[in-house]
Length: 290
Ligand code: C2E
Ligand code: MG
Ligand code: MG
Ligand code: MG
Image (tube, rainbow, N blue to C red; front, top):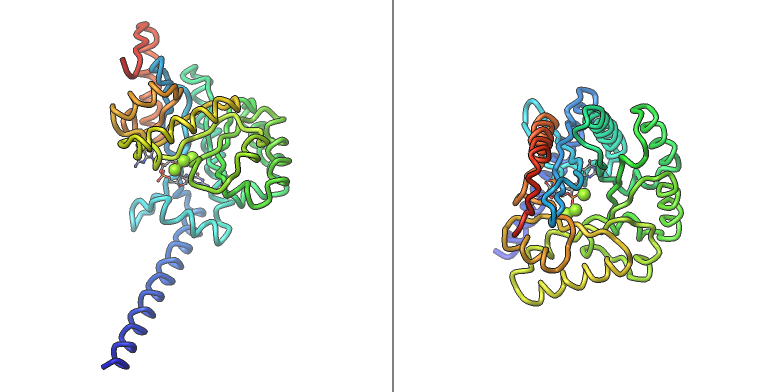
């Protein structure tokens, strides 16, 4: 019995492994094909100024839309794309489409802020990263001030000294840098002080945790640290009025989350910008929270 059970376990384990490997390979192939067939789209999620209720910016989020399997979420394909290196090509597509869309919205005077694009560790490590970004900005006739890059603690903490140099090169061009998912990685406060960042994005996990006192104190402390370092603070994953109320109380400036808007297709985002513009023209500057 024991042996058989072991045997079964072995088989089960093996099947699960095979299943995972097959799925991985499947996604890798879908991505290769999808890159050729233009199956990667960019959606945009608004970031809102909590005090004024006005649009503060937006984040570009990749969407992989396959004809056969429909939408494959970033959580499913980004880690695999990171491993295979396909993230470099996918990231390039995202940067291009984000520049193209933002150029159109700026020309139409619908938007004058920045588009934030997530940059993977592999992209960040490219020796010609700043040249690539320069080329893109020139190609789309955009100033560097139209672009913000979101990087994670993991990206910069592998070799922080080198990362600081790369960050300075980007910031020197006029690009803004945001630390994404802050608090979930392992960056030290000593480095946080030295990173030339503009923005700190508090991870959604901390926002969810504001239901209890300790969680709320935690967010309070993060906001205080950020503000003492002269950083702008964005709360990620805000889903409830209560959270927004608490964030406003704690002095958080910007929110992003389903409570206000989900990531929108370029077409939907354009409609959103048009609505925002008529709101502004009507002089109805309402705060998101009273
Ligand atoms: P992220 O950069 O932290 O992006 C925020 C994620 O939270 C997005 O998930 C967004 O849709 C989701 N989100 C926003 N508001 C809410 C909310 O109120 N509640 C909840 N539950 N979720 C919310 P998404 O689009 O699935 O992307 C997941 C992650 O995949 C991103 O996390 C980012 O790390 C990565 N990613 C997305 N697009 C790109 C890209 O173009 N390049 C790279 N390298 N990574 C990307
Ligand atoms: Mg992000
Ligand atoms: Mg994030
Ligand atoms: Mg996150």
